[in-house]
Length: 78
Image (cartoon, rainbow, N blue to C red; front, side, top):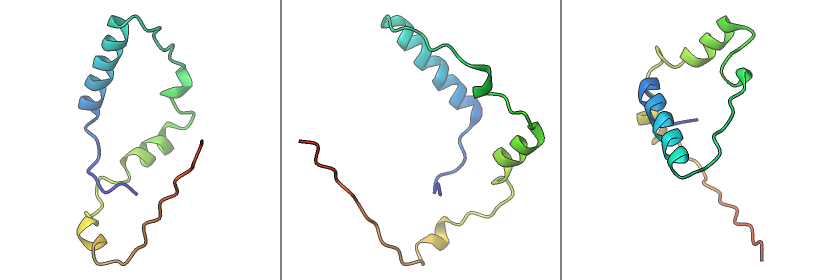
C-alpha cells in the first residue's frame, strides 16, 4: 500500500524523458521498448485498475491509529 498521492503522469513522463536523455549522453545503450509494456489486451480493465484510487478517501490519517509491526531482514552476503 502506498501512502503517497498518485503520481502525476505528465511529470512521470517528463522524468522518463530526462532519464533517457541522460543515458544517451552518457553513451549507454538505449532500452528497446516492447509494445506489451504499455498496452493491455483488455483496456477497460486496465483503466479501472489505474484509476481505482481516484474517488477513494485519503486513509493516511487513519493509518496512524492502527498498531503495526515493522520487520527488517538484513541478508549477510559475505
